[in-house]
Image (tube, rainbow, N blue to C red; front, side, top):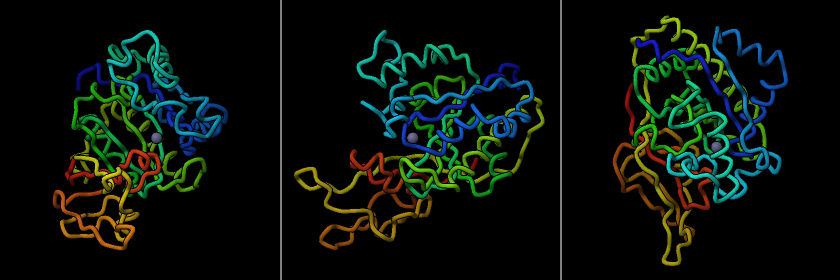
Length: 299
Ligand SMILES: [Zn+2]
C-alpha cells in the first residue's frame, strides 16, 4: 500500500438534498451532540473529521433543491467558472473552494449521506472498484450483512458530477425506504451504523490491518429505465405491483415491469438478468425515470 492512500481527512456531508432527513439529522447530531459524535470518533484515530450540512436553504424549506439538483453540479466543467448560473451551481462552486478543489483534492475521503424513497435498504455507493473500495465493501458487509454494495464506475471517477467527487475519494450512503421530508428510525440507524463502519475501516486501512480475502456480492450500475410514455410524453403506465419494492431482486425477460392505466401488463423486454433499484424513487418521477438497472457481480 502506497503511503499516499492513507485517509487523514474525512468530510461527512448531508443535506446535499434538503429533504433527505436521515443524513441531515445524523450530521446535525454529530455537530451538536458530544455523545453521538464520540460514538463515531474513537475509531477515527488520528483522522480529522469534518461534518457539513450542505444546502442550507433547501434544508430549511425541506425541498430537494431550490433551482437545480446540487448533486449534479460537480463536474470539472461546471466548477471551472467563476459564478454559477443558479443557486445550486453557485453553491457547488463555493463548496469546491471551501472543501475541494476537485482538481487537487484536500480531503482524502468525502462521505455524502442520502436517502431514497425506494426500498433499496442500506446501500453503499462506490464510484471506484480499486483495492481500497473493495476492502471497504468487504469490511462493511462483514459487520453489516444486510448492506448492499452498488458500484457506479461506468465513467471515470472525476467525470462524475456528484458532490463527493471533490474528495480524493468519494462515496455515498443511500438508505431507503424513507419518504422525503421525514425521518424513519430504520433509515437513521442504518445510516449511523454504515458511517461508523466506514470510519473504522479507514482507521484499519491506515494501520494496514485490513486484508479481507472473502469476496462479497455487489451490483454494478448499467442503465436507467424510463416509464413507457405516450405520444404526448405522458406516462402510460405505472410500475407493476409485482416489481414495486423489489429493489435488487432479479428481473428476467418476460416478468411484469409496468402496468398500464388500462390494466395491461408490460413485461420486461430489456436485458436479461438485471437488478432494478431506485424503483419509483420520488426524485426521479418528474424525470420519467422508473428505475435503474444493475448487473450482479462480486467484489
Ligand atoms: Zn439524495
